Image 1 (cartoon, rainbow, N blue to C red):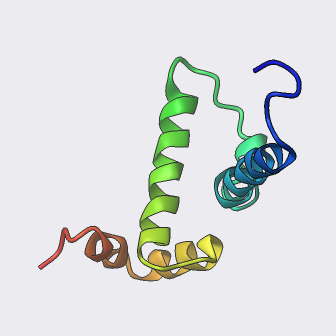
Image 2: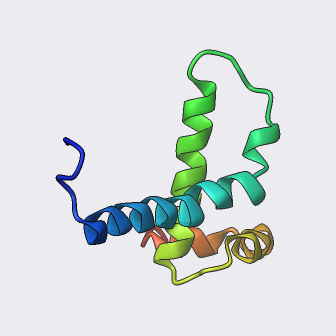
Image 3: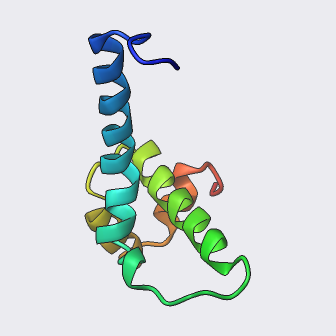
Length: 90
């Protein structure tokens, strides 16, 4: 996009959109799963693990949870909860 083609409101909306993703996903992956501290560098494993973390975060958000760390602690006590959120239990 050439300079001056976007309005101030459009730029602000794009910036807010970026930080919304950063706060809802990347921050949770960094702080809750300590993703930045991991030392996995074998083939596709880092991407696979990031995908599994995204799935876990999404399942908990779909279940109405906003505190993913607390949701993970609950799942550690009752592993049927995320399966129920996905409709995989009877």
